[in-house]
Structure formats: C-alpha cells, structure tokens
Length: 591
Figure: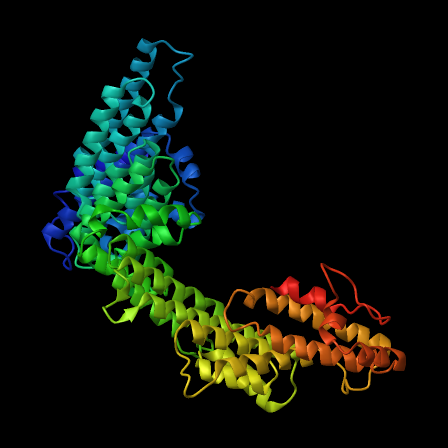
C-alpha cells in the first residue's frame, strides 16, 4: 500500500511536467492516462486495506488471472483497452462483491449474543461496506461506471438483508426494497453473471418474485433476449417449483406470461425461439412435470384466447406433446380442437425419422387410445366434432383398430413364413385398414375369431345389408371353421387320429366352444346352437362311436338320438350302454 501511495504522489507531482513531452499523444490524453493510473493506485490501495490476498484465494482465480489484477495489468488492459477486457472488468467487480459479502457470512447467532451486540456488529459491518463503496466512487470514477456502482449498492443491500433476516424484519424489508430499487435502475446493464447472483440472493432470502420482476424488466428493455438469460429465468422458475408453496409458483408463472418482454426472440447458440418457451420448459422439462403441468394449464391468463395461449399451443405442437395439447384445449373448453388433435394422432401416417432407414408409425394401441380420446372430446362438445363426426363413429373406429390389433397378434403368433403373410403384418403395423379388408384377410389366413368380431361390430353398427350378405349363414360357417380349426390343432391330417389324440382334440373343441360361446351367448344370432349341436354330434359319433361296433348297433337300436345325446330326465345319463358323451355339459356352459 505504501508503494502504491508513493507512485500516486509521484504521478501527482509530475503531472504538469508530463504535458508536451510525448509528441505522439496530446496533453489531454496524457492527463487522462495519469488520472487513470492514479485511480488504479487508489483501487489497489482500497482492496489492499481489505485483506486482498484471502479474497483472491476465495475467488479461486488462476495465476494468470491473479496477475491481471496487479497494477501493471490494470493500467495496460483495464485503463488503456477497457472494451477489449470485459472479463477482466468482471473479475475486478467480483473482488468488490466478495468484499461486500464477506461480512454477511460471519454474522453472529442470536442464541449466543445479546440483541445490542448483534446490532453493534451489524452496524459496524454496514459502515465498512459504505466506506468501501464511497471510496470507490470517490477515487475510482473511471474504473467503475455508475451502473456498476449501483450494482455494488444493490449487492450491499442484499448482504445486509441476509444479516437482518433472523433478528430485524423491518430492516430486512428496507434492505430488500433498496436492493430492488437499485437493480431496477440498472436492469438494462445487468449481464448473465449479475442475474445469476441476484436470483440466488433473492431466492436465499425467500424473495424469488423480486428477482423475477427485475429479470422480466431486463427482458422488456432488449430487442432480443440472450439465450443464457432465458436459461436464468428457466432455472429460477424451476427452483420456485421445488418449493412446497404452489401459490408462489402460480403467481410466478402468471407474472411471467403477462409480461410482454417474454414474447421476444431468445437467441441461443444453435437456435432462436420465443423467450416465453423458457417458462414452458421450466414446467415440462421438470422431473415433477406431472404435478406442475396442471398448475400451468389452469392459469387464468391461459383460459382465454390470447398470445400466451397461442405460444403455448405452438410450443406443444412443435415439441410433439399432443397429450398436453389435448389437456390444454379441454381445460380451456375448446373440445372440438381437442378432438381434432386426437384424430390427427389416430390417423397419423408412417414417417421416416432423420438418420434412419425404417419408417415409424403409431402403434395400434396408440391409435385406439386417440380414437377413444376423440370420442370423449366429441361427447363433451355435444356429441360430435365440428357438427359432422359423431362420438359413436369415433368409438367404432377404435373398435375397428382393436380388431385389427387382434388380427396382427394372431398373425405374429402363428409365424407365417410366406411373403404374403409378412406383407400383411407390415401393412397392419403401418396404418389402419377397413373392416372389409380385415374380414377378408382374417378368413384368408384362418383367423376366424377375428372375422367373427368384424361381423359383430358390423351388426351392432347397422352396416350389414341383408340383400348383400346373410349374416346368419356367415356366422354359422365361421363357427364350424373355428371348431374344425380347434379339432385340427397342429395336426396335418386330423381325419386319422388315435383315440388319445382324439381325446386331446375334443378338449380343444370343448375349450373353444366355452371361451367363444361365453362372449356371444347373449348376442342374438351369434350363437347358432342347433348348428353347433349337429357339428358336435357328427364329430363325436365319427371319432368316438364309429370305431366301436357295439356302440354303433346300440345307437341304431335306440333310434331316438336326442335321448342318446342328451340323456333323459333332469341330468339323467344315457339309457344306452355307450359311454356318456361330454357334449351335453358343454353347451349349457356357453348359454
């Protein structure tokens, strides 16, 4: 410090004599240089009085950065080329901030000190900060611009607010108000590092909305918002979202969306997007987005058609969040628009993603889900979407997709090796097909249960025209094909079966009749009992009774087949000497 003071006195003594000695510089330039050198001397003296060494160590500066803060570096770089050395300027400011904040980290605990002792220490710490800033304003007016000195005073207020937080609420509120005022005056001159420090300090003092006010004011004073500053807003909102108080988050989101400054472009390194997207990302990129999203979409400002609502819609569309978009439209009462989004998703075509050779298409489960959601939206909208797509029709589309899924599952389970089957599996995965095509392909590849489902749906929808198709005949034929398929199983030739194999085949038939029959027992026309009885009688007689001559003769002698097959009386067994047949106990289970 003494050496710096000596240099300052030397420069002061010879200031007048330096005029005119250098032909390449004017007298005014020489005087300005001398003045700035004296300011550097004063600055080094000021920070030297505050134990500068420990401060530098606490800032974790590198050796080269430390040398930049020496007298020669300050003169050559900070004074002579200030515009080229903004980083050095920020390092110098960080030193001052560190000196200002240093006292707040050592505040006494109220449990160990009397109130008068605490007040004395707080008063002395405040006096030191005032002296520091006053000396800088008096002796270093060129090194630190007015805006930077206002930042120092704002930082001083926050440091004193931290000290007063536990014992002086009135002083706390006074300091917070002064800090907001100082930051508000220089909001246009705050850089990213200033914003991060300010948000952290206000948040620590449980005043995140104060930081948000300053941050939004800065956004409104710019033509374009820096991407790093938009990220500061996002981080602040995410920290607010971590708090248990939902009202604070709701207020913060409402305040943000109401501010016009957020609807400017935010310039990031690789993209430009509206700054308001940072608000949406703070909610939707959060691990607790399921909890936070309802808070956002229920904000009063989003319940009416406005710029915030439109920007949110564009954000959800751009980042492919259709479920959130449907929820937003439903929340705001736009049921028809919600249904249109659902229909777009349900009918989405296959696309080829970038850097991929394969096409991507929504799964059938996805399509079913979106058709059901569209039907819900239509019901909320009075029964239809845009007065022409009925809710019942949308439910029917979902049913068709469900049948298509069933066909796909059966095709994949059977592992067909021919090219036609593989092509069908591919087409079933990539898009929706018509009921007619599902029926034809189901019959072609022996998926008769799927064909029966198509008939059931067509009958319920009233789309079966008697002049073109006899539904009863089709259903009867499908039942016979399903039973033949169950009897055949994996056997190549089911006409020549051993008795044991026939027993196994009969169990498969029995299971098929029970499983499928239960589904159609109460659907008129879909359980043709008479046709089933005839088929079962013929099958049982052919494979179980025909091989035994005595049983065949007994059947002929009886002559009354109903008694033979069903027995007499209430549950009575057969009057013949032939073994009891299981058929009579299968059909009642179906009914």
